Amino acid sequence: MDPSFEQEIPLLYLVIGFVVLFFSGNFLRGKLRQRHLRREGQIETKNGQIASIEERVAANGAWASGEIRSKGAMLVGGVWLLAVVWNLTFGVSFIKQFSNPEIKTGGLVVLGIFALLGLPIVAFAIRVTLRHFRYGESLCRIVGKAGVLGQGIKGNIFTKTEVAPDGDYTVMLQCVESYTVGSGKNQRSKTEIHWHGKQTVSRGTSSRAGIPFSIDIPEYPPETGYQISRGQVNWQLTITAPTKGLDYAALFIVPVFKTK
Image 1 (spheres, one colour):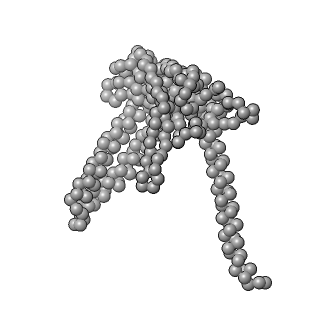
Image 2: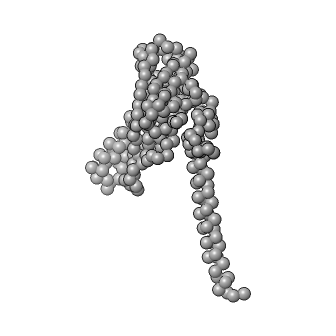
Image 3: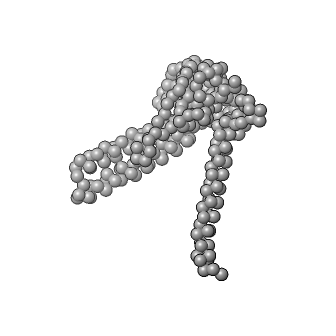
């Protein structure tokens, strides 16, 4: 056997392995993207027409049922994660620098300021946690399972315990686009609100029986999961009400689509 052929075998294996990884990686990314698009209601129909609401929400369990749960538990977990990471990063570093004889006063002051910023984050985390335990998880039931551009969105919001607010409820709907700009160390996240509308509901409404809402939506904002955008487009429905102690608040990610 030609010895040069034996030396080329490892290189051949590397090339084959690279090609397999490249194509399998692209295939997997494509499948994951298709799954994400389906869950966002962005599906293609055989006749090329705009899909119906039922077809759009079918791949998303929460949307298909017409009952969307609030993001209270997710918010609590996210805020506490931020508080822990922030304080471990800056708070612990600030304490350690006291035993560092080479640290300059200016650097210690700057680090101390960042460490102190961790305190309001912890306070906010405690606040959202207490609010979550007081009111629990809220539920939003949408008539027709989704909002429609050029028409509107309506439904009811339910709570496990009676809110009994001191003032009227405020229901707000926002079309929010989240995207990143820059690269490397200059990369940062930005949000843009394309449209918002709101409605007030009488304080005398029973939250356990259901707080009704109905908000008209114009035709021009982008729909949920709109692909010709800089980032992720979603519609956020929030409800707030003043109460004794911690005010009531809940956030829902709701689907809004075009049908024509």
